[in-house]
Length: 264
Image (tube, rainbow, N blue to C red):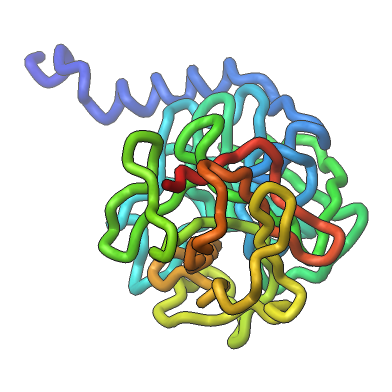
């Protein structure tokens, strides 16, 4: 009888899970709630991070951990969540899942498409197929806070208000959605080496709306050890103003406005 009184008994755990699943509603999300993780805009890009906001996704909150990688291969679902994301029928690596949010990596082998289908599944439930714009590039800068881009010095210390980067020093900015690299990113693989973006010649950084001379941009490409993440090594020009607004630009696409790089 002691075994029956144990709340962790596999029988009761299984029954509880079945009851929870039976009470779940179908996932709720829309095309407008599938966005670039950095910009919040409904424009995705291959090898870029996407976020889906909605309801009734996972039963728990779970983020990717190093133990979820098997031989450097990214998982397609996180243990205990049951959540999977498909873009044009291709399963996307999932980085975070909760009842109301999913973060995923758009497969790098997909081609741009105006109406790319995104579908969420979980525990046998399939959400609606919503069509989103899958552009060749959808540049966005990751943020430390609502006004500050995520950036570090070469020694790894964080650039922030109160600890600005000095003119003439290198600030490493982190972005997503900068498109293909050379060599190409591989499906579900974590890049181990630097790989410059294919459209490097068309890439710009603008400080207060003014393009920075290309000689100050030392590297734009994959961040080794981080799938889907791009890094930009910028030498801060001596003529830069204090705390300039910073944007990255690829052709007609540019990152979100209003971010100021702390500079002194």
